[in-house]
Length: 405
Image 1 (cartoon, rainbow, N blue to C red):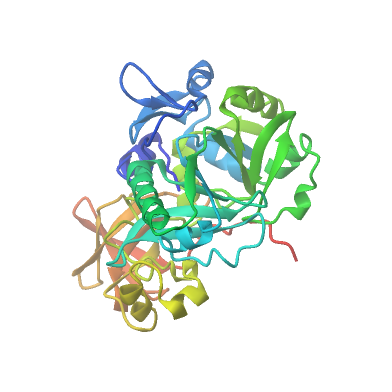
Image 2 (tube, rainbow, N blue to C red):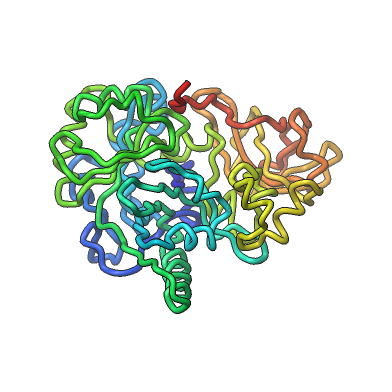
């Protein structure tokens, strides 16, 4: 749920992910150029962050380290990302699960206290409206993090459904969190964070979340997740104390600030989708290879938006499928045509960049269903030249999520 930059990220472009939105939030503001700003905006500038327009937000694309250095530092140590532009919503009321399941494909009712899941907002045509993380907190509310680029439509969607449920006698209400949001990602991330919390983070598995005091800052929520494929956490922190927390984390030499550039190439190596590029309202979860997000109970009940389109696709055939591609030679970029060996156009690249870890080009795209098998040799048209590309299983770089045995 984000993206990244240098020249690579800017090509992938702010067309897909996070703008700003709904209601008044003290955690962000707008500058004279009308770009929204996170609570860390001045701090980014002080640290030499190169600020760019990212979906209506002024965000750092990189700092002193180059894109390549920042990417590799995250893989070897850990990096700190500002993701405060994402929408954080709390859902209260006895009908909060019913409310959320009326909008998403996941099984929210089965979540244990403080357990979360990646899910999808879908429409009645089976298209993906956004991807989001839903956590069932032990504080009796759902904590939802969704993409800033979809903030306006997500808020309208959720508010509209909440009003419908209340009109029918239901009990649900929404609250936009004013907290900032940080992502600490990389193999050293949890060791760094452990020095500032009393909870044993070894007992916090991937996609679990807990409220805690972090380096003396109360009111934080730590979730073991991220958008890099590495172990790490996202920390929801009161906006008024986020600079303090960032400065404390940066005291550890393992921690470096990172921007959108590294974030995009990291998520692509991990095979993670960028909303607006790799998934959108024209793609279904089956076409996007996201069937695993569909709750088994929900598939049987067929009670989520678009189920009559999506469920039959699971056992049937789809005309196109999202695949991973690896190639050598010139970089693969979004919108480049994917060709069969005979030179026939069979799809299009949706994300692509040179992989700093693999020293090869990695990409995602959609191809005709019969051409989607791993090991299939295809080609990508780069500057009117056909370059061989191999359909490859994702993630391209192994993920290191913390799973309890």
